[in-house]
Image (cartoon, rainbow, N blue to C red):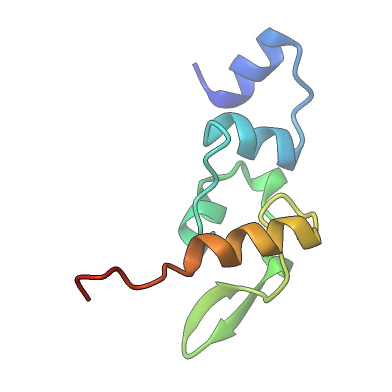
Length: 90
């Protein structure tokens, strides 16, 4: 059964955001790449979210896979996750 069929069976509206959340079980890949974009059904793909950088398609800065923008809280959470203070061993 396809993700779209599964969603329809459960009565979930098939939108880009809902599809991504169901298909990736709320664990959206970070960074979102052209490979993931290509895995979406064609009608849900949004290639305008990408730009060509050094010969590679990359998600534009500030773009979010679901098509929504980052909230200040999300930005702070992501920055906190990325920064890991050195341990005493280092």
